[in-house]
Length: 316
Length: 201
Picture 1 (tube, rainbow over the protein chains, first blue to last red):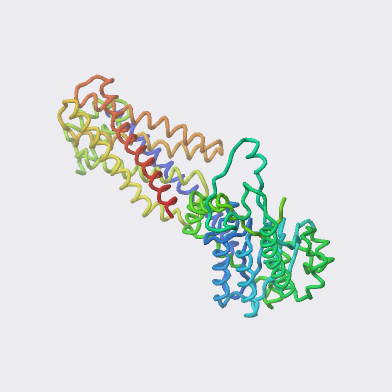
Picture 2: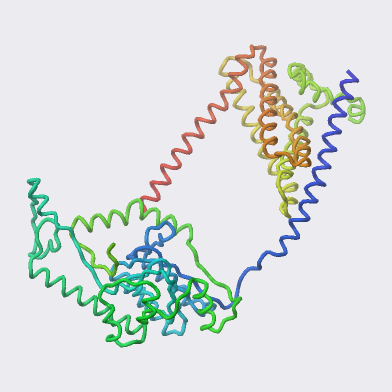
């Protein structure tokens, strides 16, 4: 038994030795990692540039689902802009846009908020990504300076409202809709009947009114007469280079250029921090919730009630 | 106590634990040299060694000091809780099968069964020094040592209640099955509630 005890004792001693060796090994490795930690950046503070991202289709929503590729909620964006506006550290804001546009009201709300910030001498610089067309351009026009990449799809200044007409298909299939309505125009833009001439005039009036508002706002934001914009404000899309030619943008460049420009216009050093409020867990959960139920439900309800939405957006 | 340590009789627990779990159970039952304290000491050492072996796999920073101090206490408490819960469930299963309740014996047995786990640190040290797939060998040896640990417990239970290896294996597995079922349904119910909450926002 004594022999066995000695063997086990030897094993235990070996384990103890390996433990000591392991501690030394960990200690040696740790020293290297601590040296690297000196290169870590210090937390940023002081005057800087705010960053707001407008990705996807713009609509009225209180959650920012842009990170999920679900479009940008105007309420969420306006809230972010307000927070930046109240923050004394924010001297300039870069609006990163990658959007084909959105609903009229949502785009106008963002535009108005940007103009309000601009009046309070906060520098606004727009940076266009793949696309900043129609409503996307509308928003950008509120900024002091606009950057677009050479390949950015922009322009598409105009308003559109559309609804499919499946009357012929329904007739072929022998399906008839029973519609009980309170007024003559309650099912305007219905997919199940032809659009009357008077109805077309009414919609056209709304479109024209929204279009004029678009032109006026772009003229105001860009500080150019309406006459200079109207020749290219026929819904045409263009790339960054053409947009520069028609003075719809100020310079060709990417996100980094926009950041540098914002800092230079706000008289900030190049090392000034960039503040991105990001998405809180609450916002992410809200957005997922809206996606699962609320927004989709509302969207489908709107479509089935034939309340076609008038949009500042580009049609593929 | 000093006489007991000098006599090297305490080493018998570790020797029988590794090679003859049935004799370990008899030794525990005789309560020579406070097996409960020795078992607790074993759990303390194993929790420290587990942290060390895991830390040795990667590059550590200042957090290592927290791990081997406060983290070690946390690991010890978690391991202790696991031992108590597992022992309680095992004893419960034994009593359901008309065997007498011997929870203290089972707690001591389970505590000592962790002894093979101390060999994980030397293995990791060797393979880290050689820089030869240390993570792979860590996982491989962790699995093998856990199997060894399970064998100690199964043979120990077999000796405690004088039952066959098969019945002892069933008693060993039932607590895991019970906890598995509870855990599985808890996760499902949690996600159902979570999605319900998100959908209602």
